[in-house]
Image 1 (tube, rainbow, N blue to C red):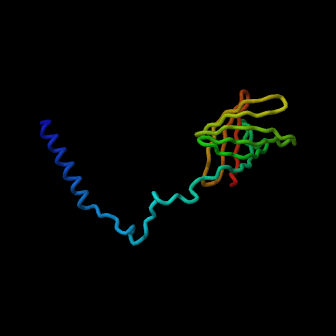
Image 2 (image 1 turned 45 degrees about the vertical axis):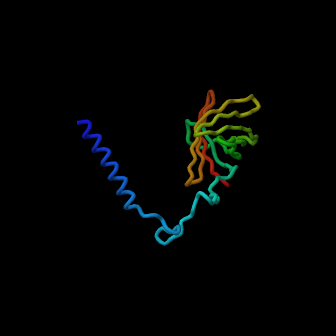
Image 3 (image 1 turned 60 degrees about the vertical axis):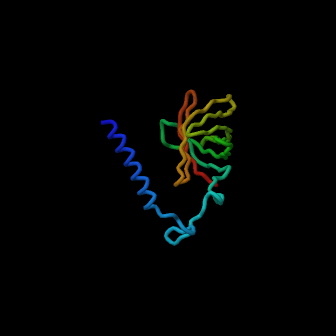
Length: 154
């Protein structure tokens, strides 16, 4: 029984490969449907690489309410496999700006916020909406958690 299965498998593989070779037609003169074919191996891609830095401007708030508690702005600089987000944020009731820095990689972020009281660690998640040019954060410190949504400007 096994010998018949092996012979059948080998015979079917032989028939399929020969029929694929017979019915396959080669592309001649770099034309497909009378349109020229661009050889991507020889020509480098044009404008396919994203920019090395983008600016972000948006609003942030705490998780318990959906109203914005302040605004933030900054610049994301791509460095190899990760990106660095440097910026400042403020609260709506005060004028002082608080700097922050985050390292972003594969949807996760880790960073620190430097205030007059001290340095606070920040962790969270981010998502980039390429169609709407938005960057959405869910962030958390030791005692607080919140959200942030920013518009990406090239």
